Image (cartoon, rainbow, N blue to C red; front, side):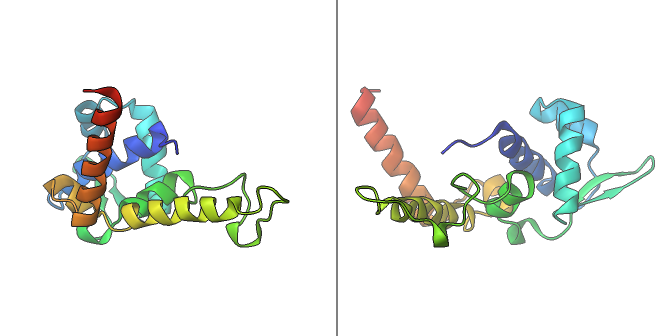
Length: 155
């Protein structure tokens, strides 16, 4: 699974807006704080606005705000807004995906991957992210990853 730079930047921008306390945050401020190209960020913010995750306000006091409370916006919402469906398999619906033997069980693997992504991305909100308090299931998965990675690489 590859998390695109676009998704990474979108999540970081949403975090900046979440700590804005409901005040408009200028795209320039987000770009500087997160070291994101302004032009690229504006393109991402346009996608987030289209998905109704952010609002924009013009003028000297303008900028961007979250369209609803950060606790109500999941990372999956952000991911889908800028990158489309989670874990797409060459643009096919997993429901009708079939392979011949000996790999006929492969769609189950793809479904499990999508289900795992959903389990994490749909349970972590932007508010969780900025508070640093992850749901227990996510913390447990991250800890498991760290332990197994350290065991594999001896770090």
